[in-house]
Amino acid sequence: MKFWGGGAPENKLLSGKKIGFTLAEVLITLGIIGIVAAMTIPGLIKNYQERQFKTAYKKVYSEISQAFQEALLNQEFTRKEKRDIPATEEEFNILKSKFKLMLDCGSQDIDRCWKKGDTICGGACNTGNSADGIDMENGVPKEGSASCFIDGGGQNWCTFGNNENIFFVDTNGFSNPNRFGRDRWMFTFADINNTRADYAKDYKKVIPYINEDVLTQEWYCKRPPCYYQSWLLK
Image (tube, rainbow, N blue to C red; front, side, top):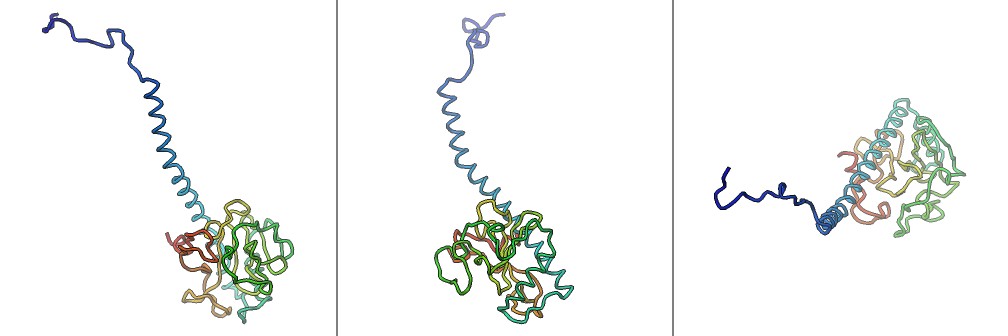
């Protein structure tokens, strides 16, 4: 066979030459991959963690709502005053009775049921004092003025104070981050208008105590944003 132009076209495969990448090309490619990974992986991890926190939040909200509705149907609540120590103890015991218990810490051993983490005040307010029994270092009332338990799913529950219908939950127990608006939440009882109810006769549902998203640092959101409201709806 003849080839016009003075000879056969060059064929690298037939000529014995090897085709490949230089070390410099490989290193440059790996560097680019590393940069892209460093830019994207943290965001993916954050999104994954937030989905976990959101799912856990919805789960505990469903659980406390079911416990509340069962007690409401059975007319177990009796609160007649906003600040009532016996009524608060009664309400917490009612809720506790609806869960399988892993550990009941009562009011004298709450450190076994609640780990130190975000303070409810965030170190930026003076809403609590010793008279209120609020422990700014722990985010829950001081030992002796609150009750706590751990349910069978490893979720930690506590009263906010010994005389109000506000309840804390840590959805993943002692695991980090122990932050309000992430794995720690506050619930209360509300009337038909989604307003916190002070008397049992007005109880209709459970709502987040902070019934809105918080986008700036507040005493109940040390590290914003805290999606108290929208994470239950989206």
